[in-house]
Image 1 (tube, rainbow, N blue to C red):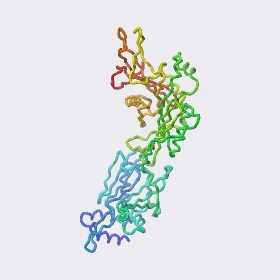
Image 2 (cartoon, helix red, strand yellow):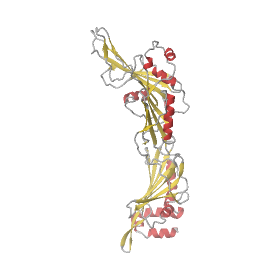
Image 3 (cartoon, rainbow, N blue to C red):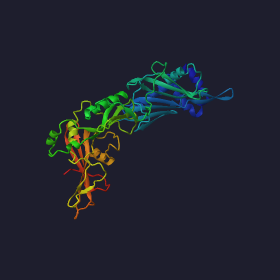
Image 4 (cartoon, rainbow, N blue to C red):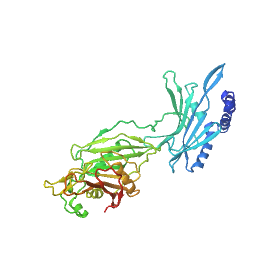
Length: 470
């Protein structure tokens, strides 16, 4: 069989002159391993191991099959061996990739910091070769012209590996003007059908969710509802980021400023006005998928829940770490943030306003007593879902990213402080000096730390410079 195939190949124009070196390599490999892909894959694996010791082959692509031969004095298009073969490798330790290409007689390797293909599941050491896969794919369809061939591991709906499959694509069907593709099981060599779950999910937009009656306004109750909604969207979604609006109106009647006394005065759970939960799930590729769930109108019933679309995230976006399922009760952490705000409330506008009495004898700062405070749960280094209505602003998050406890899940908030730079006589136009206080509470230990920014004119837009709080 090998000798017949060699004679047929050497009798065609593609194995003459410039193509002869490549044909010899492919032929020698074919006679030894009965297939060009099998002949070259071992050399490609050795090249990848020199690059990274943990490198695994994750995909093989073959292309440029078209040949034009002369039969009966006329040029005829035929399928020949692939003239370009690419072996793709992935290093789990470094999350980087390598492509080894066979062009003519030379194997060329190209490291890629951002993988050229997203796949990470390793191909087996032995599999059905390209020639056998093409022969199986051609069954019942005549001598079709192959345009491309691809071998990789497909996976099931639960993310577990299924099997290695060759996807053999032929030229356009003259009846439908569409290309024809057939899948070949690379273990048995039989024609098969496997769903390609690597395709990005359809963006169905934001859709409403169903909330249970009598929903309570505390974090634990809201998270249980959000977790259940995320599970209904597909398996594997885990929480990695939380944005909350917490009610601080209960602080108005507090007179003691000690944390212990305030905690005693505010028994019960911290009331939440709105909640945003960000979920993610890993895929059998370098990509990951995110899902946002919002619960709103908790202080102005009826409450509502919306489910964002499942979105595919690709490098260089970093896949987040997931919040451990056995995290401690967050209520003491949220209470610590709630009690950090001034007794007057949070500030809801961009700038302070100056309040003064009719006699013009004193000047102070106005607060909005009904404004809820923002609180976030995130981990330094993880991706951030930037919702403007949820905050924080980008420059505020930059402070968190550089000053929060490293590699720790952290509950945190930003408190706006200010003071009037008094003039004599005082007026409503006295300037205001403002600064931000960042309060960090370790989600596991409950330890609290804080950082402040340097005071600045309230109307300036200078960068936030963090300093220890006085």
